[in-house]
Image 1 (cartoon, one colour):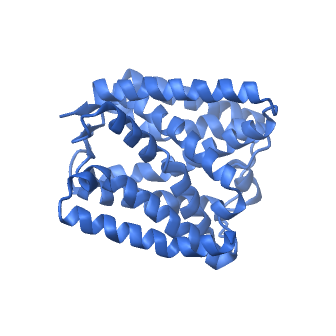
Image 2 (cartoon, one colour):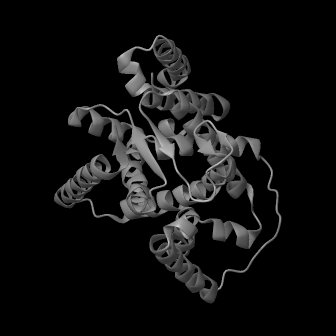
Length: 303
């Protein structure tokens, strides 16, 4: 039964997307607001079904609990970048629902799609890079790891201190910061891959960044509720609503998502199986989400 549902998700996702697109074309008010969310989650169902058809395995088929965990944590991860944007002011949201409940639900559903979508696309991308394309190998020394962490901290300081000059560092800093910690904790890392000269995972995630980045901007362009950019010294030559050089940020962003995913996965595995502790952490995340949503309403959303 489970296998049949995973196979049928291809048709359900395609039908949902087509219906959403038709309603958008006819300017149905509900779909103008919610199109972006319908597009992404129907896409996730389609890609997961394709992954399962190609290899009898997919993120949803492996573990529904893990999939839902990544969706929940995805909100936290994206909100980190939203907090940076309070200082950077690189994007703002327009034409969102006026009702607080509907708007906050929209935030949650949209932000929860980031990590699941990228996991699905990276899973599929690994089928493209079947062989290992090694460019070079590198030795990861303790000094290298310490320098990487220092560079990550410096990148955050520069981006927040002089945002008009150093705003691109936000899309690099967490690679420098999190990869060393994942390496020390013996999680999966790109650094460990580079030590072995294995570039398949790196290429897969870079392709994931470009693919999902293009789709984010494509669907955002047609949606009624959408975001718009205002980038210092790069605010020209737009594809959809994104300045062309802005697409380069999706490459390191994908690597950051991978690093975040590995770190949170390891934390979840090592978390004691105590219902009370998990309940406290769940409540913390919900309060954090509510606080960030309030800040978005006040500083990032415009009429």
